[in-house]
Image (cartoon, rainbow, N blue to C red; front, side, top):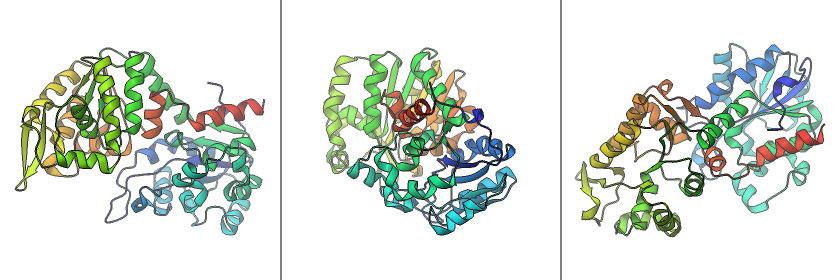
Amino acid sequence: MKIKSFKEFDYTGKKVLLRLDVNSPIDPKTKKIVNENRIEKCLPTIKYLIQNKAKIGIIAHQGDTLDYQNLISMEEHAQKLSEKLGVNIEYIDDVCGPAAKDKISNLEEGQVVFLGNLRYLTEEVSSFEKAVKLTPKEMLNTYHVRNLVPLFDIYVNEAFSAAHRNAPSMVAFQELLPSAAGDLFFKEIEVLDQVMKKPQRPCVFILGGAKISDAFGMIRQVLENKSADHILTCGVTGQVMLAAAGYDIGPGNMKFLSDRSLDEFIEPAKDYLKNYPGKILYPLDLAYEQDGKRNELEIEKLPIDQITMDIGQKTIEIYKEIIADAGTIFMNGPAGVYENAIFDLGSMNIAQAMAQNKGFSLIGGGDTVTATGKYINLEDVSYVCTAGGAMVRYLSGVKLPLIEAMKNGTIKKR
């Protein structure tokens, strides 16, 4: 990959704009960070820059229009970085206005300032990205880029987990500043390539959760190139597969799908089941709540009026057997609504089966990491990817805006 490593630069006395992705799961009541995986993973890059006498301005985002409840300041992120690194990382609640520019201008070697939440800027939210569709060159006149480019000498990106975002902070600075990627960026790609191109066999993909649009593109890719030997479906993906297989999953489940336009995936799922027989497994039993208790029923007894929110014990046992024999395991999305103790049985058993497996295991996505960490020590997983959407799209063969921008930036500065 023709992208510069950030270790190729001399940082002595240079101002470095460091783009991180520390967007973290937030407790809805306390508004505090509940999972620090992304924060932990970026520490080596910051430490390296400090030790090499860079003057560092950090930009990052938290929350978005689609998860407004997580749209909070970056102050706690800065505090946690300070504690973990043992250095003072000053936070300023300004993204690129006069206060931020003044602070950047007066940085000394080894000093770090964490700027305000990028998502406070209209040009950085996902709804703007989808509606306006700017190219990197067109982004050069955005408020963010115009204000920060003159203040910095080098742009370093350590935000592979946001690589699918076509935002100014991700793809525009490469047009004007010498640019490079951090070690984590290359590590994430190396691990994902291992799963795609050289997996230990059998290779098992576990797809659950509620965000299934990217996962459906990945199903075709990993089956066509024969990366996956088995795909175990659960969560909403499992419901869609059941509907595609001809089961009446009930009015509650169908309303859940149609309200979110997820029923459009039923037809593609039919093609997958037809074209790749035996490769995709769907649940044989499901769990639902009745009178405050967990109840399970086999799929032959569908439909029921209640919404099903977890896989049943029969499915759990079959999935555990397949996981136990796997050489490679990839998981994206929990098996059920794990936040509710009634429906955490599937997620717990799958996590524990992964921990006991002696092969290579990979998980990614905020909910997946949070759910898995609830039941096992994450050190029992071979690799915890910081990415969710970017990871799935990369595995789907989709070109990611960040990777293309980093390649183009490298070419232009030769």
